[in-house]
Image: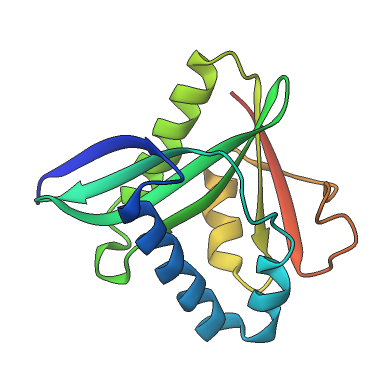
Length: 150
C-alpha cells in the first residue's frame, strides 16, 4: 500500500463521493440521529480538504473550516472500512493539525457523536479534551465536542 495526501477543497469530486459514503455509513449506524445531525451543518461551506489515496484510489478524507480567527473546526474525517485501523485516520488528523497551525490557528475543535465511543477514545488519545458543546451543537445531547491546542 502506497498512501499519498491530496490537498484540495470541498468541490473535489473524490471528496464529495467520500463525504456521501460517510453520510450513508452514519445513516446505517445511527438511523434518524444521522439525519438530524447532518441538518445541523449548513449546506455550503468552504473547507480545506485532505484526501488519502492508495494507488490512485481515494480511501479517506478529512477537512477543516475556520470557526473563528484562532480556531479551526475539523470534520468529515472518514476512512473506508477496509482501510480502518491502519493509522490512516491518525495521519489525516495530524496532517490537518500541521496545516492549520501553519495557517496561524491556535486551536482545533471538533464534534463527534455520543453513540460513537470509539471516536471519542480516538480523539482523546490525540489529546483532544471534552468541552462544552459549541454552536450549532449547543443543545444537542447526541453531540460530544472536543478541543486541542495546536
